[in-house]
Image (tube, rainbow, N blue to C red; front, side, top):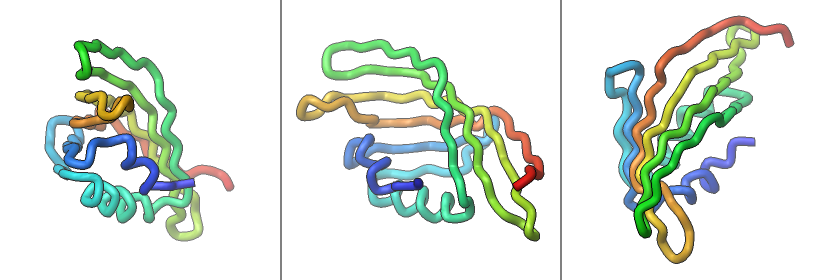
Length: 122
């Protein structure tokens, strides 16, 4: 299930997200409305989306923190009646803030380090 509106609740209202493909900036978003609209538009191209989160290192300093999270992302689409899977190795460099007793992402830099694309059996 792709519930984008709930996903953006993990961010502060004025959060920023920058996305890089290798070293090239491909997207820069500010605020949960802009993020939600962009995420929804992009993910509408896929019937299934998986995020497999791995290592997560966090350093806390009072009500602020920084962290790095490693992730595998699988995006499943249908093209010419074939299921296609795009797998990406991603790492997120995050800045967190504690607001009203909840830790939220204030800034995220997403780096898509590598991608693999292949047809899969249904």
